[in-house]
Length: 396
Ligand SMILES: Cc1ncc(COP(=O)(O)O)c(C=O)c1O
Image 1 (tube, protein in one colour):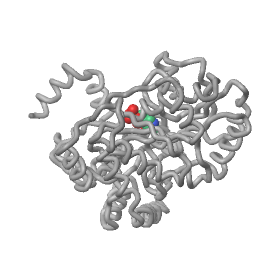
Image 2 (cartoon, rainbow, N blue to C red):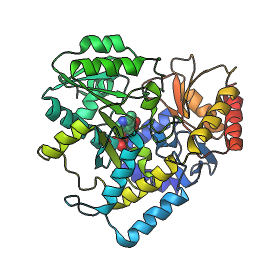
Image 3 (cartoon, rainbow, N blue to C red):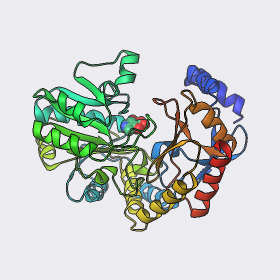
């Protein structure tokens, strides 16, 4: 299909305003063929390094052969299955996911998006604690369901979906959060490192301070690792580097390697008991669809590869040393990275300069100085060096 025709159909049937906005912002790339760490821009025919990875969806690159093989094999015998009944696919995928948490989060509820996984978590927290109040942090993004959008406070206020159950505090301020905790607060939900705010890094002790305060107050702690999980920070979950274990963990995006949608909410034993004994407050026809479970199993095999952590550390070190004297702020935990400049509106121009050099990133919506910089974890050392060089050529 020609680009003009595609745009006409998009404009007519999908979202005319979005197309105009992309044009205005200069984000005029259309994804064509894709393989490994790169995709083709249909407009220009150029192949770009995918250093956005769709927020971590393509942690293992595009169309990873092991994940494709697993899903194709699953289709020999499976379809989405029946979500009312036990399924060997769901059971195996749940056990594999639970095994990534050192025995701490053994309950698993599958869904088909990060939004849905957060919605379930919010409902379950209310059932479990009997409290309605939720504390969230400014600049964290949790999705676009009614409650998950309310948890994304800036967006909710702007669009009129704010909700009296939510109180927001600044991210990275454990004292401010602690001061808001009282007997009405059942849940604190935070991103491990807020993606949409351009990955500001947590100060030492921040999440540990929050976890301790939650515990004292009988409040549940949910960590949203939709963007940071599954090996990207060098450990399977970012939270383990902060020395905490949450009561609930949300994962999505990269869980299927970008091949078939699946997300999950992982639960502590206490929450799992509530989940298992409460009315069915969440039912999802597509949640844990069997091909998605096959994709998740194959992805978790890649995540569990003992070589992955050292590989991520090696790549991360290459970027860190390439950018030590760069004229921009470089934020980093493993391959969760961002590039921030002094220009208060600079993310579009940074994005354009990087794209012109073949490096596709993504402007951070909640921090207009910053672009998210998340290459796939499967880069070779030479790939990382080539990308780092292109970034320096683009930005100095
Ligand atoms: C941290 C975080 N949580 C939740 C979500 C929502 O996930 P989904 O788009 O799959 O609903 C996103 C999506 O970008 C996210 O980045």
